[in-house]
Length: 238
Image (cartoon, rainbow, N blue to C red; front, top):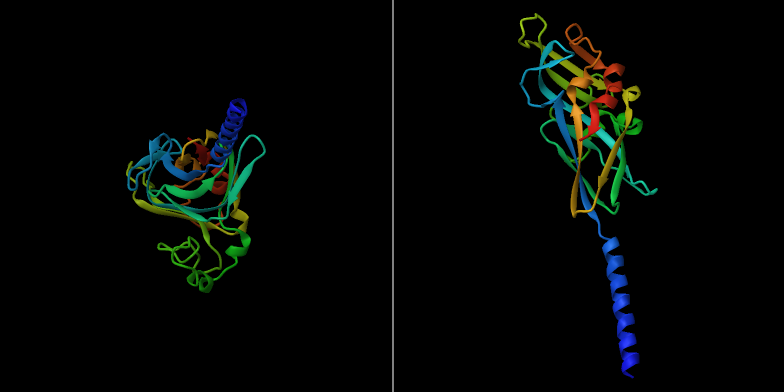
């Protein structure tokens, strides 16, 4: 009888250990995305003078862009996605992914801009959205006054046009239209083993202006394929 009792106890303990192990494997991680703004090697600060394109002094007074369509995959064929839109603003870096059951982040994909369906809306549609919705009316505005649709990326500041080393001339790049949507893929290679994890994404505003003659083209309202194509070099995982 003692042998049977001991054997039964051993089996029970083994089953409990198996159940606990299964519960552990179901634990989820709260994941955040942190967009960290940089200008080259320097941290981003509004109204600070930076040098871009080797010799051009600039200051930034506004920098924000829409992102959506996030998907995260591990290296074993697993993946998760979220439908969220984020209006990523320099100076406000952390955005909530939510819970994930992935244990390893191998690759992150997302889009910069607004999908064609949402981009077809008019101002009446914007105003009908909840105030907390990133696609609702924003201040400063992230939609056109003269055309339907959203401004995908809005970057403003001052640039040194007269060559005295001090940025004095306003510049404004307001980029939109369906053709400007860009899809990005970032390699992450990060373990997700803690209760809360954060994927750090660098956004280099100097790289956004690569091959752009900002001194002689201070204002763009509409399309800049060069700037949007530069996104692949402006975004990276830290």
